[in-house]
Image (cartoon, rainbow, N blue to C red):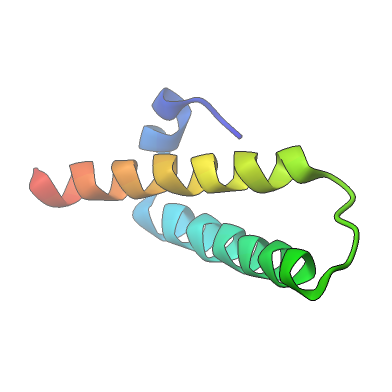
Length: 65
């Protein structure tokens, strides 16, 4: 994932598209965990959640201004 500064330079549409993509990825990984399947990379799940938080922070900053 890009740095916060790089994320702030993106257009709102790009940020929202990336946010949707990451949410789908987390949903897929979450369903794999709950179904009992072996998850290939557990760290990716945690990193995806952090990236979602970063993107949401950027969107909230823009709405405040």
